[in-house]
Amino acid sequence: MPAIARTLDEALAPIKDGAMLAVPRESSGAAMAATRALIRRGIKSLHLVTLPTSSLQADLLIGAGCVAMLETSAVSLGEFGPAPRFTAAVLAGTIAMRDATCPALHAQLQATEKGVPFMPLRGLLGSDVLAHRPDWKVFDNPFGNDDPIVLLPALKPDVALFHAPMADRAGNVFIGTQRELITLAHAAQKTVVTVEEICDGDLLRDPLRAAGTLPGFYVEAVAVEPRGAWPLPLPDSYGIDAAHLQEYAQLAATLEGFAQYLDRYVYEKRAA
Amino acid sequence: MSEPEFRNEELLADVICRLIGDVRHVAVGAQSPIPATAALLARERANLHNLGKPYVSLLGSRAHTFFTDGARELFDCAGQGRVDVFFLSGGQIDGDGNINLVSVGDYEHPKARFPGSFGSAYLYYVVPKVILFRLEHSRRTLVPKVDFISAPGGSPDNVYRRGGPIALVTNRCLFDFDRARKRFRLDSVHPGHTLAEVIDNTGFEFDRPAEVPTTPAPSAETLRLLRTTVAPMVAEVYPEFARRVFNIVMPRESEASSNR
Image 1 (cartoon, chains in turn blue, yellow):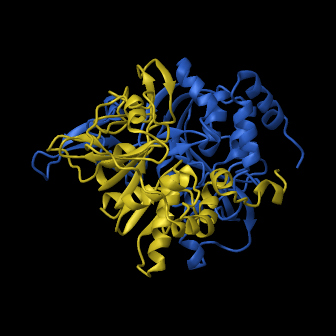
Image 2 (cartoon, each protein chain N blue to C red; image 1 turned 180 degrees about the vertical axis):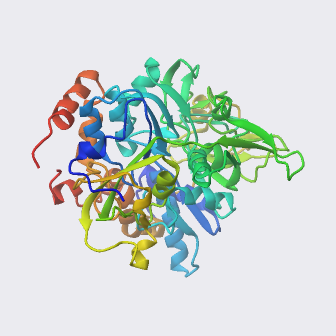
Image 3 (cartoon, rainbow over the protein chains, first blue to last red; image 1 turned 60 degrees about the vertical axis):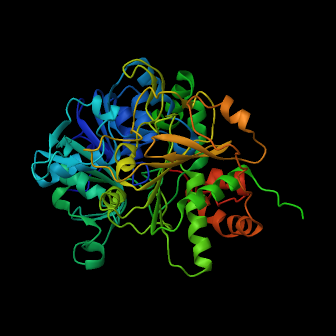
């Protein structure tokens, strides 16, 4: 049973330099307070996997020099424009890229979830996405007749990290309809979760809530971090902080501005 | 009779709405405010006649989606053949319907980098009607050959493919895509734009009829639906777009509660 960690840093201890770290898309509960804590710690050489896309979270980690390899379907700030530090890093060649497509990342984690070595996926044939992925193989469907199909290897993250509305004292985590978070936890060796609050009772006892609950069995550590997805949204709890994203897009356009952003919002741990 | 005034985005949403046609399920992906507007317009138009379709799934929306199986459900749903229409764009699009969402120049040493392929390398193959949209209509975006194929416009006969492009909408015109000929064909030029301008600004070859019609303007009824019913729905997912185009202001989350 995962203990509720006393501090955020204690909960993040399983995330080591060089780890394969998997995070959800920008709208499903990105653990942003935890991400800022990892940057403060000076984490290095992450193999960052996004399920399947990312925005501020990947851009911050890349800009702060925490990422060696990025496996993603896309990184951008959405309505707020391109992700400036991601773009700069790819142009400068300072991170290794594994360009994917959304359902491929889902399928690769589902392979690990099922304990099988690969998953087939339609599409991809004739694309340069496939051409630049020597780790993906084309195979002839053994049940078909001249039916080539792409096989994707199972992806096994060292740690999955996300933010959710609540956990109970046994570390069961309510994820609602963000069910890819369950796959993420099933596939990762360890899962670290930050939550808005600890709730009374047992989430698994109530069938309505149990259907949207990740059992604590799969969870390594839980930390309480109110507004832990800020400035990104937490589904059904709060929306995106548009003004902040605008400010980020503006500052992160230059190295100096990005350093200012880190000083203001990451290194300076502001009082609550 | 005076024509109602309309914005470019309203014209394009009306054009895309017509392309959607009579289908059961329209899904809209990331960074697609005009397709989202068009999909909701299609649904609200049909609602006026109690048709009960199309279903609309907007990525990033809580209100306008029925998915309960997480971020993967869109792709699984499309794999099952239950998504009829989807929308894709490209930093570059070429005359074969290939789209590039990744980079310009050599992939290992790019001159420009776009966000990434998103779901295109899958959805382009499995969704029957894919509508391409790229507002910037220039020789920079509509190129003879894309530098990186995120997803190809067509595939060899032995490749499983029930989907692909049906049209390309830009801020100057509408192209149809002829899958048999694997070529775009100019369908109409938007009001205020000219055929010469389209030819000048298109980097690939395309077919065209002897007389190229002008894209019809949205009706007063369409504009009313867009502005009163659809715009507030769009604002949930695209607040900046809704503010700029429809002057809809949503309450700011950051003003509702403290940040940390």
